[in-house]
Image (cartoon, rainbow, N blue to C red; front, side, top):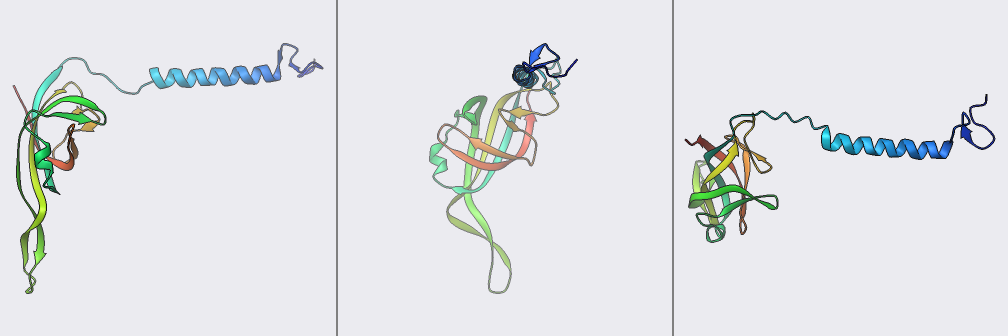
Amino acid sequence: MKVVDGKGRLFGLINVIDLAVLLVAVGALAFVAFSFLGSSTITITGGGMRDIEFTVRCRSVPEEIVGAIKEGDQLVSVTNYVNAYIKSFSAAPGLTQVSDSDGNVMLSEVPGRVELFITVRATVNESVPVIKLGSQELAVAKVFTFKTHFAEAQGYIQDITVLG
């Protein structure tokens, strides 16, 4: 028996082109199924949601940001609101290190820049090993992009407190 007969069928059963199309379709279906169902994320049950507060320190940001945020503003992750709100914030003059003529290092104010301290209250899932708010992981000293409907600044997390 020939592998491909005179009509182009494999073992006399199926056309070689039809077989190729069938294999591509099965491969695509398997890829889609694995993408949606084959997640390696482990979900731990129990624990549930917990309120936290954390402070973000944003250094040397434009002073205009102070007028663009207010207590109660909801935070945004990428393009979606998250369950996190500004509890309080304060601004201090933006500072930088400069050297005087003798080589002594001093702090000097930077015109038009402020240092921002933002306290955020959020509800997060405590049953997973990494605390996340939207797409960002929360950990002390980790870079955090602070974003609301009208303002955005990058800083780092100074502290995290679990409430209740």
